[in-house]
Length: 159
Image 1 (cartoon, helix red, strand yellow):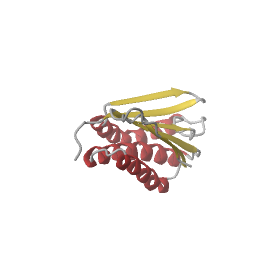
Image 2 (image 1 turned 120 degrees about the horizontal axis):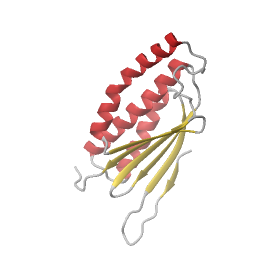
Image 3 (image 1 turned 180 degrees about the vertical axis):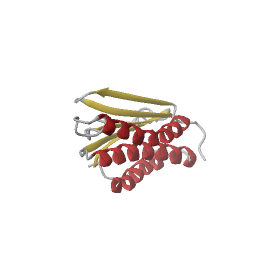
Image 4 (image 1 turned 90 degrees about the vertical axis):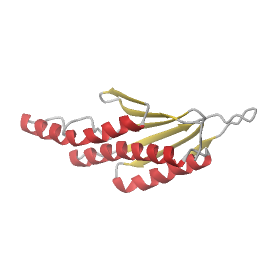
């Protein structure tokens, strides 16, 4: 269930945060897009910027979900969106195990090479996200953390 935290102080809007969890299924992408767009509309983020950020987040989540499904991994994806007057930050934390190349840990050399070649198709998505976003962080600790942070600094002009 989404949670909102809104804290205006002296007519200055502080960070607006929404957190939600989705299962690792591409049918949930539309829900994520709608949640993002609602936040952007509420914060009056420009149509151009909001469309670009939604597209970048969609690419990241799609890659995670598709790779997880290809490797037979399952789990939930936790998403935290923080927006203030300066930047939008989207943190994607998943426990799908997609960092395992083949999902079962006992891969043969041929299976590993096949998995790596499949990963290459996601490079275009990463290049596109790098063009849209200002900062991308990836935190990984095997068995404990698999977190992607997408940051876009917002322009001051609205359309």
